[in-house]
Image (cartoon, rainbow, N blue to C red; front, side, top):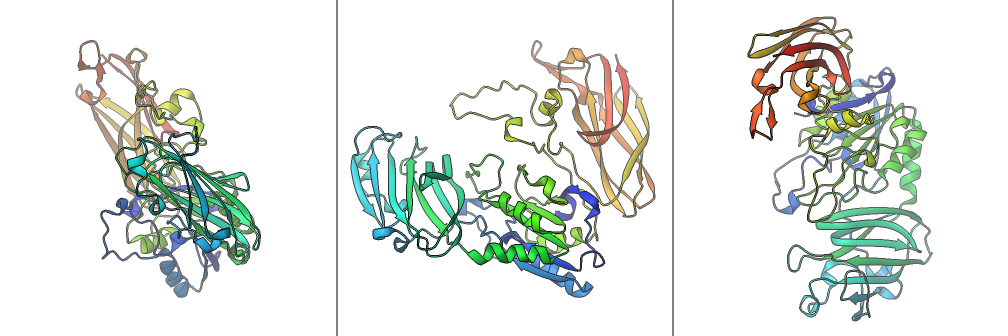
Length: 491
């Protein structure tokens, strides 16, 4: 599944596949390279397979290195996306923080209760809180944080509601409208021996269930050598492989829009600036923004790959098998290019049929990567398009040629543009086929669409109907890579 589903998004200068001739020294970065790789959704902690043994990508790459005389070295570079330990009382001046509780969600009105607590955790709320307060409350935590080392500190907030973390008045982490246990990270460089004013503003909002409220604050202590050693390793290597991931669990999306958690974007950019060549392996559940895309040579999206990730990824990176996965969604260049829902109870669906790639087609906005995109290690061509309509089926035939030196699979995709009177999106995916083609060879691709599959819903008659007119048949390798077109009149 990993070999079939991994999507090669970018491969500049053919940095992939790896080879001992060009890549005698490989640097690997990120917790995703270890057995901590997010191989599946976290299930909210309710369903955990304790028997699962993850094949770490780092182990597979190291074994490959031993057999081919390649030096493979590893640096964590980033502490990962798991929950960090709660900040202990010893890291707060006076052994804790003051917390003020309000009977509102916006800190309005007089302070109802003030307490001193050793740390910020859901477990620290007074037992009488729910009985004494109305359905909602807010709280302000104030204290002085004491860094005990110099380096980048990663703070981790987990909970329900909205929480804003400020250090010396600067917003470091924002957990907005969280529900069912969202997780947010913030990173900041701190000096050992300094005193840092810490303020955390929390409001529970309107909880879905009684008792479902609270926030916990943890930290991964700064490590000055982690950053410098990672940069030195990147400069040493012929190529750097950086693993980056999101964090998803049941009912708990990232709360970050489409950004990677924490400072992973900054880590990728920093390491890429030190590397001769850089490959980013994305371990995410959906589209992410890539502000560092122009700084790296290759990007491969492996989704949540399962426990066999190690061997499968090694085979993909070294070209034992060519990537053949395609994006089942559009990767936007910016969050503003997407349809964003509001937080109101009533949600208008004003976009109508224009969702996903159809919205990008209509607006003309160029995505970062279009729906259906996915590269291979070879170069494919399409020609000889033939279209036949027998009254019940539209049959499309074309020749798919592998012009490269690698045996590979390509997914030929058929999109259909409807007559203008149909008022449909600019084009709709109607058929596709993944075809294996040997290097230097051709294969005939046949796609078929039933006449009934071209019907659309008619709100006036509350029934399906076929719109007569000219249909534009578009054949290509993604919604943004159409190679052949032919018109077909249906009446």
